[in-house]
Image (cartoon, rainbow, N blue to C red; front, side):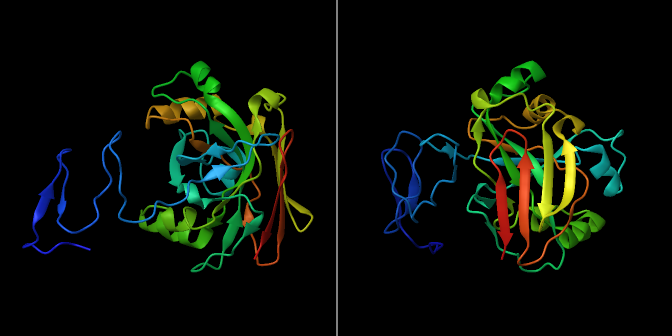
Length: 259
């Protein structure tokens, strides 16, 4: 609702201005707040063995971080620094269901390692970046490949192909304090029992520490940020009724049904 030009404007002690008779907008930090609409529920993720949950701030994704996947998508991995895109926090879904999205006939699976940050910062060195990771999980970067391809061809952003509703199924996370070294862990995905993707995390072009360090030069990272670290080769289409089994050695499994 936009107030007409003749509306009287009220000013309170905080200096905030709003049309008289309308609910107040959000107030600055530390000031009691009245919201014009109910606040959306926070997005939180399960942590294995913990009753407390992880609150999500942002979801960053790195593209083409496995050489063979970069090649299958028609790119030269030896010439490209990491690049990033975002998904909304509420794209994360932990209930084991993926609703097939509208406006697409070619939706692909991409299995990925997700890292959950307990610390943040900017312009971090890789050694400091590694200390930011609180937990890790198996995730899927579901992609409307036809819409992504059209956006690439037109030189447009990827949101319609990557950031749609429920586009990031994720399993329970495990605290890094409870994890073995994941450097040589296997990562794989099967569709209806048939292996489609299989690699090792060591096959990543950019390590987790490198990803965080590079990303922190572009954005100030914060506790609550989630980073999807790229997918290996073998991405492919899914259909309603498919059963996806995503695995990373040492992490809780992720099983997803496409509906």
